[in-house]
Length: 107
Image 1: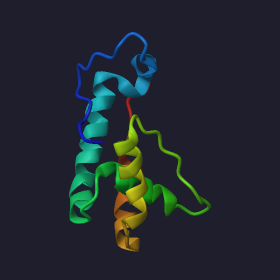
Image 2 (image 1 turned 90 degrees about the horizontal axis):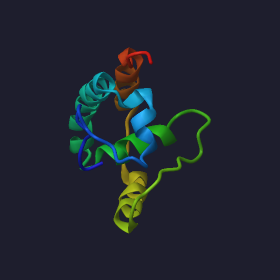
Image 3 (image 1 turned 60 degrees about the vertical axis):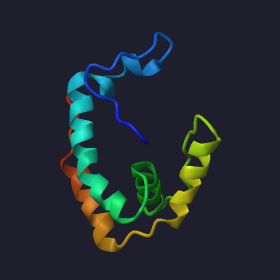
Image 4 (image 1 turned 180 degrees about the horizontal axis):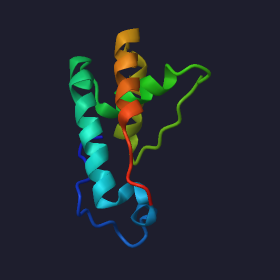
């Protein structure tokens, strides 16, 4: 995830996200605010935000694999590097707390 979608983003006609409530201007704003709280942790790990999220996902009880899409070879390689990110219990707890208070605007 190199860039972030900003409120006011115009999706192409064939992009299914334009019809999803997660991508309203308000929800884009709320999502970016939550992700901004996670960025320093990703940076401290020399990881991308996508790598941090993938690693957190793998660390969840009962999860043995995380599937992530990639638009090109470079993204696939970057996603695979999530295996190199090590998260402590405190860091996992920090991420969980951010998610616990995160709310999207209802559709």
